[in-house]
Amino acid sequence: MAIIQGRLKTPVNSADHALGRPDAPLTLVEYGDFQCPHCAAAVPIVAGIREQFGDDLLVVYRHFPLSKVHPLARPAAEASEFAAEHHVFWEMHDALFARQRQLNAAIILEIAAGLSLDTAALQTALDTARYRQKVQDNFADGMRSGVNGTPTFFINGRRHAGYQQATLVEALLKVPGPRGPAGPDAGSPSRTGADQV
Amino acid sequence: MAMTPAPTPPTSALPQGTIAPDFTLPAAVDKTVRLSELRGRPVVLAFYPADFSPVCGDQLAVYNEMEEQFSAHRAHLLAISVDGVWCHGAYRQQRNLFFPLLSDFHPHGQVARQYGVYRPDDGICERALFVIDDQGKIRWSFVSPIGENPGADGIFAALEQLARPRGAR
Image (tube, one colour):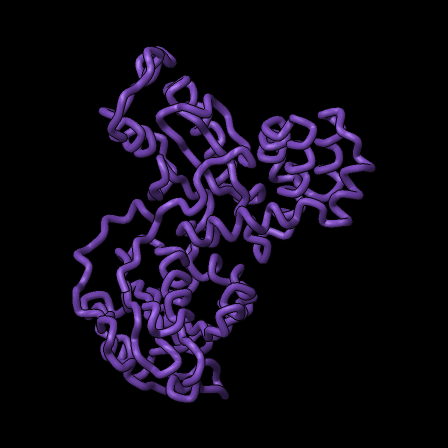
């Protein structure tokens, strides 16, 4: 049987947490785990790439908690879904990664309080597993897309190996098709681009 | 993981349509697994180079999160490397793996050789996947570059195709 691997199974959609213009020609989908140190290391990398590509790039984060090695990954993911409902997903995302080394149940609530979220309501949402299905659906989608660890990135639907900034940038620049007027050159002046590889 | 330069992937892995060679391998000091005794259910063989590779990008750690999905297909997952049973035992316990790790230690790499996925230069096996149907026939095989974790999408796509009625294939 001919089987193609490493292709994003579920396209970017309105249920996703996304940064950027929905009609951007480039999409970077990350499957991540809030307790994974490599994912924390990828946060500034993704930020740098966003700065470089501007309106040409849509960034999406999906959950892929490796719960057996990271017991807090799923509660953290569920807490971020609660934050999303209150329009502060990315603030929660950044704070969870920033405090990853100290992460525990109390810190998750503390982060939520810092974002002016109702911590009692969050605790109830966690206790009743209100967002578990969404997190599991992300996981299952990732599994069927060939996520092979965290973080795993997909560039316009194709799995990218590794998460080094230079190779991600190189792959993004290789995607064929038109770019907007605010294209790759409109980003940060300190950017070095693909020739750095 | 992906940074390792990939040596030329071999083309000798047993292809689909081949009857999976039977084997008996130790899963622990006092336990062996015989492939032919698992007939009647699909079997996934995951050959991998070595125990104790880094956690986050680790192939087996990813499969270990998928116990429900493997059981939904009634599939047995067997992971195989040339490490010895004691090493496997320590690794399995540390990672709390739900599936057995089979030891292709003695004669060294014999089963990997039978499946065409032994690397004689390194003395380890390839990172190779085989999906075997309930009749013991290989329905899908795949060799990944040694440094590149293949993920599980190919496995589940193959298991889904097995689950379809024969006329629909």
